[in-house]
Length: 283
Image 1 (cartoon, rainbow, N blue to C red):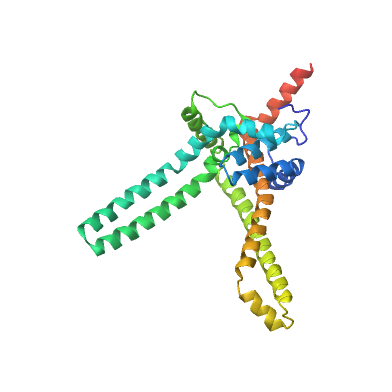
Image 2: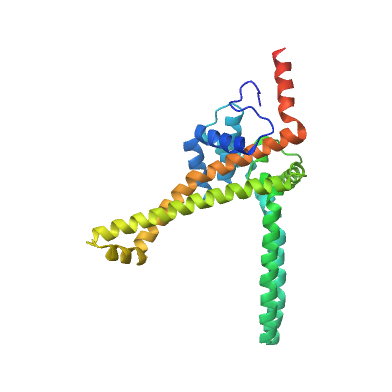
């Protein structure tokens, strides 16, 4: 990155800066990021990679078209898939292992054994899922395509590169786990409550319109329409919620990009290195 061309000066960021700058990055690539995250619904993780690339280029003061972002994302697609698969592999293996006692009890015809092993297996899987979520702040930069847009991978082949992304994310987050966990949880709840509020509001408005169009004039008739849970209204509400979710999620991706550079500034003095490079280039 060229420090002189950056629209946002990189440095260790406070919470208010992270959210403010994330919105700025999104505003600078609104349409492209929305389309990228819409594509994410079809093919994961191309949308995340493309959105992170757009944010990284905007942060560097260089424009990037959506087509160029997707071309870049395609070059990082398979190593990112390796990183994601490696991260969830322990959970998948455990799911297979806990199934074996259930099959053994079923073969033996023991209903008590089936019930006991099933309950034990479900509890173990739930604990493993919780552990996986708790490890997410250590690896999110690799899993969401953030490091992929900021650094060239080390190693040859998709396996070596995918594992390097995980190792790099783990190293950058060392010693700052609880800060990352808190910020990611804060953003998660912000996105959740906004989308849930939009979903509930859209559902109520649609049902109110339906009640009025059906001739309902009294409060009880409109209330009955609200409680009817019409399939058409539910479907329209879900569609509206999906669109608004796709509008909000890129802010989360921009925040993760900023967290990545925040970590590099804190742990590697990345901001000072850019200033030194800029002085050398100017001299």
